Length: 64
Image (cartoon, rainbow, N blue to C red; front, side, top):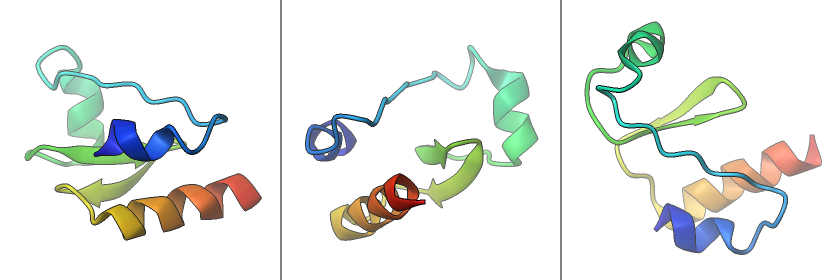
């Protein structure tokens, strides 16, 4: 769903990181369940968000 949504936002880059490959970064966010979504260094979602919520957060960050 994330990959589908970001197709509508050409300025957005998505990076998928496996938690075992970046355990230090995962621990820094204090999240121990997946999936979770970080935007611009801030934890935005734990669990898969609703598409409308994801779109709203992306749009808000692009305006800021």
